Image 1 (tube, rainbow, N blue to C red):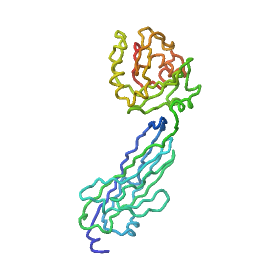
Image 2 (cartoon, one colour):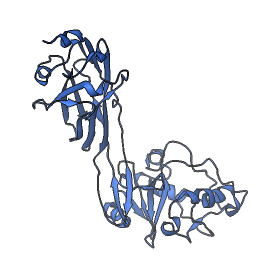
Image 3 (cartoon, helix red, strand yellow):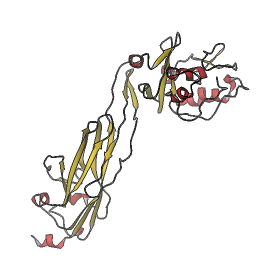
Image 4 (tube, rainbow, N blue to C red):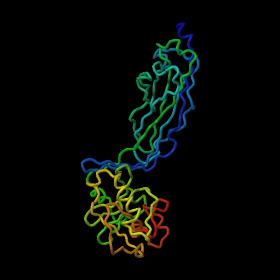
Length: 346
């Protein structure tokens, strides 16, 4: 052993950070290209399980050759498990948290995955990824063994210092992909158990589990398709409430604040709306009493953006029970847990 090796004492601490202990459920996104749609749907959970030890501590470290580094006994062992229902894509990296002095250029590491062999030594400053673009099928897991050591060329600059780092995992879900015109995509998934037809309009009807194919990402907002009109246009509603403004029937709908906000302020946030949104759309908006089970009739109001009426909400859970069935009323896919529709906004 050289004198240089005897002089340098290092403590290496590689701490384990549980950054993915919670569930990322129902990740959904949509992108469009040339009038075709790609929709990602699925439940994803990647669990960064407890390591054999919460940190890797190595005292009396000195510059090592790769052969000596391979013989280091201390190692960090941890397991990544996919507890979701779809394939997971993920990256595992070493993120340095000590910056004075900069250690990445003199730190080497080797990795063994599951029962394989250790890979060739890697300098941290050249590649921080323990595993890149890795995949895990649902319910499967992968176990990693990591050894870290000081490279042979390190000098007295690092004497008596401590290197700190954390393990970082980033992940996403596999795309649940169907391509083609959006109307065809929706129609292909419709059946008697998840839709109703009132003679001219087809409504999606059922629980969230049954209606899990109607998500559209458009203009930075998540929408849900609610109906297919007789002319094959599609009606959508935002997944989340977007305003607290309501329509008071003491004011004509077309002159109300909500009508103005929807068809001016909100409309301006929608991309390429002149090519996507029906420009001569009409909405039932009358002050007459409207039963939730009776289709509205009478006057309609022009407007590119409108409000959901009571009848349309009933159709969203009609497959689950009658209009008087409180369980059915609360179980439909449009029930998001708080009031976003008022009885007098019909």
